[in-house]
Length: 422
Image 1 (tube, one colour):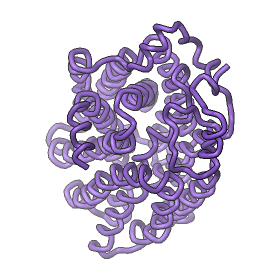
Image 2: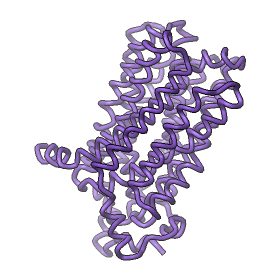
Image 3: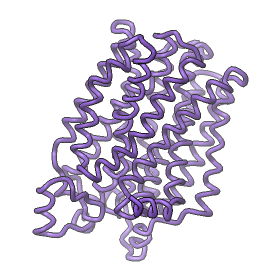
């Protein structure tokens, strides 16, 4: 463990930058979730219309993640990372200037284009920079940044929204632009990408990886996991405000319980995956999620609700901790950012969850709608994860803990990044 700590300290600049980028990205996105009921009144629209803004933001990630992925493969991970941060920061600030529902929708679509790009570039940069030994842990630490952003949004909603109003919640989203100064001065370009540049092998990301079962699993897993998590998180503040009739102050403990569970669960899932394999980790975490859904959505006792929020954060959202490495190790270096971008773009399928939940709320109720989507999503992800696709992965980031099939393949014929590309 001491060697892990030493390596984490040595590479703290890139780990901090990736974590901070995801945290600030999360703040800019999740502040909208707290404002859903209020914005419905401001723009004189119903819950489905406001939920549609969230859905449109998610769909905007498709062009953002793929576009920024192509840019990261061609021009470098660091430059794409900085540009994406500037993009979503400016779009968040512009959201505070919206004068109508249509203009607000347009600003959030612009935000979504940068929102996905930050992930694509930072995951590629982080996974290609830190040593293999700490990649799973670094993966978990990075995505735990989302909860810090979520908690910052909850604090801003609790303390600043009553005083400053909704527009300033989005104006605060301009602050992440300052992260680019840290990136420019303290973070180096990916050594793997630089090596590809020296060997003149960098090209069109769409042509540098072969579609195979490992790629298909990466895309399906990303879509399924995010489908479940959007059902878990997007309407949770609205659920607390409208179903349990809490106010902006009394929802805060439940948000904290969920966030603390996530902060613990994400590094834990990354560490567990490095010890027992990703498939075992996925099945274990999601098996716990299914019964925990009842505590999260169906009970009325505040203590049990808090326990449910903590467990949902730890085991449902905590599982997100393995996603950066899960995606990155299924693509070779030359097309890695593009592959990760497409993989994350597939998560846009999941954005239908809050909108469909909002549509079924009049008949099922919000708590039963959320419960069915969360439990169903967990079962879908378990089904996706059970297939062993290790033999199709490029060798540079492959995981040798994933079963004998990969070990046999690696022993008989060494796989390299070049074996998986045209």
